[in-house]
Length: 255
Ligand SMILES: [Zn+2]
Image 1 (spheres, rainbow, N blue to C red):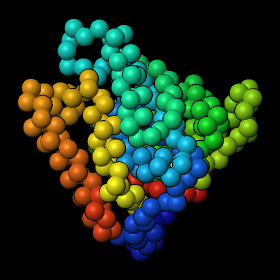
Image 2 (cartoon, helix red, strand yellow):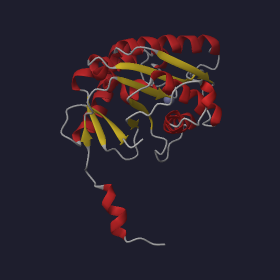
Image 3 (spheres, rainbow, N blue to C red):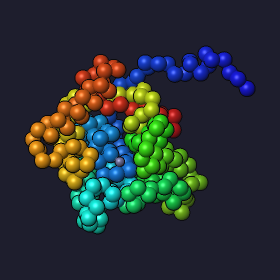
Image 4 (cartoon, helix red, strand yellow):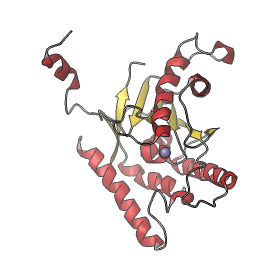
């Protein structure tokens, strides 16, 4: 059945961008790889942590493909990337980092993975969950798509008592889900004071300097260029609502 065009246009409310949730008591950020959380919402987490929010990071894969060196020892790389993620979380003032350890590049979003994410949501009981937008168009990396679906579907499982009752954990329904790399941005978090913490967290991922951040031989200059890129991205995000620097999200709050 066809619907009048107006009914498709109406809900979009173009330009309707909301700004700044009240700092939640507990937040859980779910990323595919070490460093994804810092790129996606590092400034927001630092801001909330400074307001006494208890922040947990959940990293789904082991990061074992995060090197351009074909001779890199994978076990060493996995250990190094966990260490870097813990340092990055500390730079944001975040607390625990939970690693599920799925093989990098081979993440799925089936029932087994959903159960694990559900368990972490029920254990940490966040008010706000943050994750990748699984509906981002033309996305190449399958882990980011699967990680996004696991955040969404992990919430559905966590809130409903008949999912995974053998976990022996009470159901938990977060109030809000923020998706970064959003296909349709409708929420911004201002991070003007927290861009230094975001940059410090990103730079804690030393193993990714060459491959992801373009920081190699001429360290000082390239580090400055990387910082400029991150600041530019935050400035572009903030422009939609007149914020100097922001992180952009799709916000779902009927969970
Ligand atoms: Zn990633």
